[in-house]
Image (cartoon, rainbow, N blue to C red; front, side):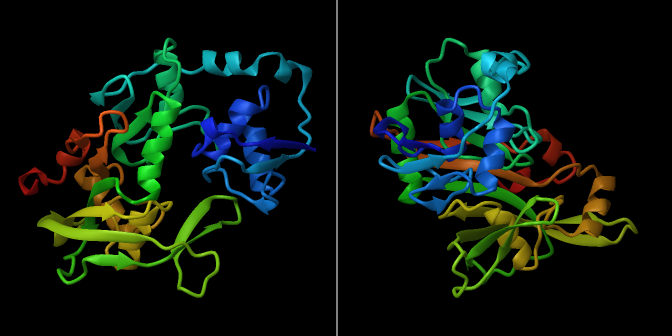
Length: 323
C-alpha cells in the first residue's frame, strides 16, 4: 500500500489526471479500474475519478502490479499513437487557451477512449510546459473549452468555478414549447451506474444523501417548427441555459426531467423524436457551450468569449435568427 500527499501545486487537479502524472508506468485502464473499485481512498473515503484533489489530501493507493513491458515507457508508446491536432482558437495568451471543441471528441482519454482533446493538443504543442483542462464538456457537446498553461492559472480558474463566479451558458434545442414561467431549475442530481457500468444521472430529492445540488437558469431565445416523420409540425424551443453548478450531465438531465429533452440526446432524450430528427439531418445532440465569462487570473480583467453555433446544427435547425 502506498500513500500520496497532494502538494500545493496539484491543488484543484482532477484525481485521474493527478494519478496519471504521479503513477508513472501505470496504464490509464488500471488507474480508472482501481478508482472505480474503491481501492483508491482519499482521506480514508471513496473518491471518484473526476473529483478535484485539494492540497493536503492523503491518497491511499493499492499495490499496482505492472508488467515489465508496461514499466519500460508506456507514456511514450501511448503518446506516439495520439494524432497531433489543433482546434479553432477563441482566445490565447501566455496563461491560458480557449478553443472551440467539435462534437464527437472526448476532452481527455479514459473509460474506453484512448485519447481526447487534451492529449491531441499536447501532441501538437510538444514545447508547451503545461496544458491542463480547466473544466470538461461531454463528448457530444461542442463549444468553448478552457485550457490552462500554468499550474497557478489552473488553480485560480478552478477556484472561480467552485465559487460560481465563472459564467457558463449553453445553447440547447429542446422538444416542445418551453413554459416561460420555468426559469430556474434547482433540482439535486444523483449519479449511478447501469449494470454494464455506464454512468447515468437522475434528479433526486433533498433527502438523498448522495444527491448534489444543481442549479440551471433557463432563458427562451425562440421557437421553431420542425417536421416529424409523418410531415406533421413539431415545435422545438431554443434555450440559453446558464449553469450555476457544474454537475455531470446537468443540463441534459434537468431539461429532460422538465419534460423537454434535448434534441438528439441518446441518453436522456426522446428516442422516437431523435429518429425523426435524424431524417431531417440532425445527427447529434443539440447542446453547445456558447458563452463563457471569467476574470483573467493574471490580468485581472473580465474575459467574455462566444463560440458560434456549428454548421452541423444550423443546417437542419435554423436558429441563427434567434442569436
